[in-house]
Image 1 (tube, rainbow, N blue to C red):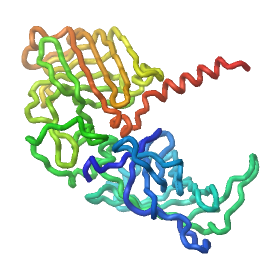
Image 2: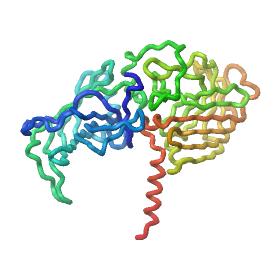
Image 3: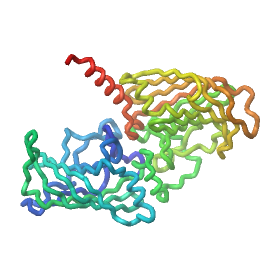
Image 4: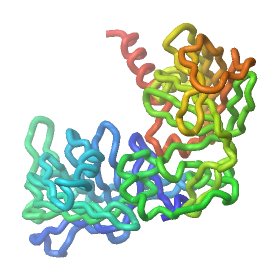
Length: 403
């Protein structure tokens, strides 16, 4: 699947629209299956604090390239056990000794919104199987559903729905490799043999393309390239930055213009220099960004002293020529409707390690880095930079409220 065809679902946890079928089979229901995938989309969510779940719902595209639920019209939702790391489980099932063996999950739940109203029930044992294909990672889920009940009044048990007795849930879906790649999932590597083998020399990546197609995700690992600049005093600057960012840390490397691969992803330009710089900041990942913004559209952080991070000069073969501490750093964030602008300015500190050729005599002491991070990238990676500040504001307002 091409990256441009991926249908991302926005929310607290990012999901995607998947192909397949998702059905609740009820033999006691006179009309046959009360709910099926016909006329609705199947949406899969894997991460986040709520665990993984599968949902049958209507969706609408807004903004371009991103989808959302339409009028909260959920028809059927399968909630997998929150205590299970579904990503790690699928990864383990793909390799020996578990390869090809089904797993059984306890604690799954089902909710249904139909002509019966809103009902829910537990699934004592859910059978899970996987398969690998060119289209993506196949996931099959099936199991007998326990009593489906309508919610009762406060402190009262729910009422069973006889027409839904002896129901069975069955789902066969295909999770696209593109979704797993943009999420930075370890599962993306399972589809490496189906990836097009593009040779360097293609057209430069066009960052003006709409939606996710304008985000330069690396074809192999999902690490993105961003427009911006990376300048170290005394060295040649580069107009693009390759980034490895998670909730805790940020690693940045200057690079040339990435090239467009045939599947919509990006590949590294062969013209990039043999020696490059790596800026490693172990405490300035997404969590830090959220705290800096504190619910606002802009924020600033200034740091001094050891422990901020490192600036390393090394060849592509990872041979370190020099490694410095960062003595001081300022980080400015500005979040707009279409992009997050990340600007870093700092000073190079003492030399920790020196190997190989001599360092340029005028290296440092200043460096400057700018990233232009598209909002679709944040959406695909479950990054809500304003949520932390909004939660903190709510806690603060509640503490000030009169008793």
